[in-house]
Image 1 (cartoon, rainbow, N blue to C red):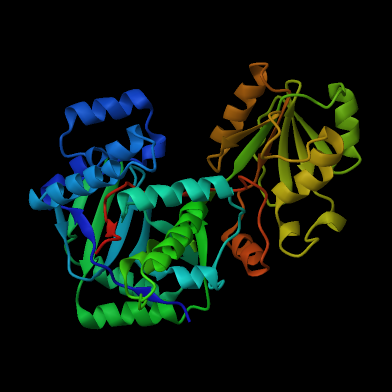
Image 2: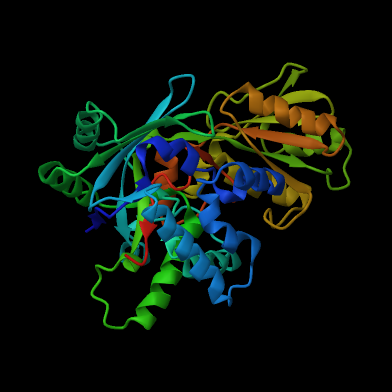
Length: 415
């Protein structure tokens, strides 16, 4: 059975939320980060900056300084520590497109035992690096994003909570409106816990490396504290659970630097032997359905249609156009065996519409790449199917939103 528990969230004071919260540190260019540190004394970056600028994992002073700054933010009431709670989180952009989910903590054991399912492989070096980071800073400031099929009872609980005044509401540095409701009513908390724990599984939507690194960190802490009982914070991971119908899944497109020694005409003929190819001319083409792929080559767009006999084979992966493209075009025609490591391949985040296709076109027109491929976004159904089959998608098959601000809620692993 899934375990879903409230946690003692550390969060910004109401009037400080817009100042404290930041983009994920990976998204900051060095110059922008330095400017934020110089102009905003209440930014969360001040807490973690020793671990950013000093990479020596053996230097205990890094951890001491991070903890000291974290405790100082609490003492100055820039950050507040709640009693054990769940939270409802809502994010809304200028187009009034909103996403909603429940924040709580999930068990590392559920991940290790396969109740929290993954759909992509991770890079061990990154997991180890993130685990060392956790050892240094002892806080989780970015939730793992988990998902599950649409569930009416959970939807109702979230809807009832959002009728109340939010605990926090502010416009973030990302230009989006963020709302957070602390859930501390015992009856509502029990209803949330029971509803989530009735689910047969949870699925990682975003944060595979952070989930993996948390498992490594937990194993490390259990060796340090062999008499652990399971309730300690280091056994848990802060997570936001978002129903699948509230996720935004976008395409992830590909551009390729060469045609493996072929001319455009030769390459096109080879592609036509695998897929049904329809020339679109100079009219930009965004694939309108699954198993439709957009190709931009030599100034023209083409529709590539996956033939019926190729669809759905094998179960799970055969539903993914990124997999079918790899198996029947990328590997045999372009000679690319490992999409992660071959520098001829470029990845471009899609937008779910023509904008992503036009960005792909610009890359090819620049001369840096010879051909581009645009994909129809993978459905939540197919994402869950792949995970249920114990399989993994090709790298960068999806770009999933929402993206979260760091330090909106924090799990203190020393608590």
